[in-house]
Image (tube, rainbow, N blue to C red; front, side, top):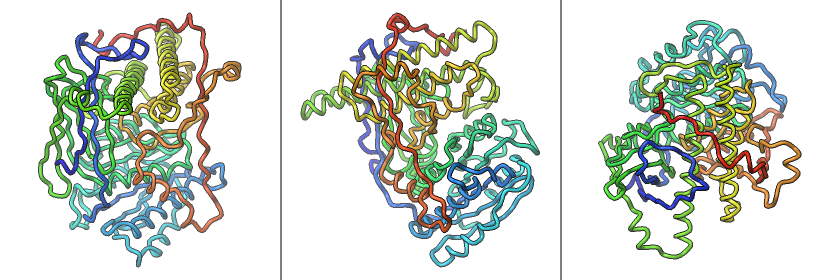
Length: 535
C-alpha cells in the first residue's frame, strides 16, 4: 500500500487568525487539521477496459458554436481524438459508441482500438448527425444492458466505464430524476456530462450523485469538451485503488455533499498523480488517526494505509524557514478553502435544495432552474446574508494574498473565482444555481477541470474596478489540482492535429481578478446563517 499512498500527513493547527475564521462547527473545542496524501505516477493500465460512450444526437446538437462548427461536429472531433489516444497510448482499450434521441443509433460496436483499425473506426463516426427528440430513459436502459450483458466477456465488469453526454432536457420517456438515476448499474464508473446551458440540471445532478462511482460535469463553454473527456480518461486509465473509504478515529472528515463533518467518507476511485487534501476536525488531535482503505486495482487485494498526526514531527524537523512558511500557509489556505466549501454547501442545502443526502437515499430537490428566492421576505434576507458572507470571505482572502505575497497561488485564485460566482448568484434573485453548484463540485472532488464562465470574473462594478489597488491578481490558466499527466491528455483530446476540417478551437485567455475596496461598515460583521443541525 505504501506504493500507492505516499507522503500521507495529518496536520493540525490552532494558529488560525480571526481574519480568516469562516466556518462554524458543532464542537467548540475541536481543532482544525488537514489530511494530505499523494499517489505516484504510473503508466496507463494494460488490463482490458471497455468504454461505453453514449452521446445525445437529438436535434439540438445541430446548434452552431462561435467558431462555426456545430455541437455534433465538436463531439465527433473529440471522439476522433479519443480513438487516436487509445490507438497510440494504450494496449487494451475497447470502445463502444452509441447515439440516442428517441431511438438508439449504433456507430461502433465494442471493439479493441489499434493502429490497424484506427481509420476504419474513425470512418464509422461520419454518419453521426442530429435528429429527433431526447429520451434519456432509453439511453440509460440501453447502457445498463450493454454493461451487464455485453458479449465481450473477457473484460471484467469493474473495467467497464460509461461516459454519457446530453445537451438538453428529456422530451420523451421517463422524466423523474430519481427513477432515471436508478437505471445506472451499481459500482460502475458513470460520468454524466451536461453540454451547454439548456440541459436539465436536476436530472444530471441525480445521475452524477447516484453513488461514489458517478460524477457530474457541466460544460458551458463547449470548446472545453475535450478537457472533460481527457480528465475522465486519465483517471480511468490510471486507476490505483477501488472502493476507497477514508475513516477517521477520534475525529471527523468534511463531506462537501452533506456540508457536515462525518466519521467516514466514500470517494470511489483513486488514480495516479493525485495530491488530495481533506478537512479534519478533532477534539483530541494527538489521538486522531486516519485510515485509507480500498481494493488494489492490480492485485484485487484489500489494502489499508494509516495516517497519524504529524504536526509535532514537522515542527521538530523543520529543515529551514521556507519549509515552515510553506506549512503555515498550506493549512491556512486549506482552512479558507473549507470556509468557501461550507458557504457553498449552506446555499445549496437551503436554497430550495433541501432534504437530500447524496450517495445514500436520494431525495431529488427542486430543479436548479428554480429561483433561489421568491417574493418571501425571509428568503430575500437569506440571499442577502449569503451575499455579504461571500464578500467578507473574498476580502479576507485577497488581504491574505497581499499580506503574504502569494501572487502566484492558484488555489487562492480558484477560491476567489468560486466566490465571484457565488456573489453573482446571490446578487440576482433570478440567477440559476447550476454555476455555483458546478464550482462547488470541482472544489469538493478536486478536479482539474472547472466550469468556466464570465460569472467568475470580478464581481464588482466598473467604478470599483477603476479604483483597484495594485498588484492585480491573475488567475492561472490551470487549477490547483492540475498534474502533468492529466494536462497532457486534456490537451491531446482537445487538439486539432487529427482533424481534417477547417475549424480550430481557441481557448480563452485567463481572466484578470484584482483586489477591491468596499464600504467597511458593511463588512465588519456578516450575518450568521444557522448551522446545518439547526431546526
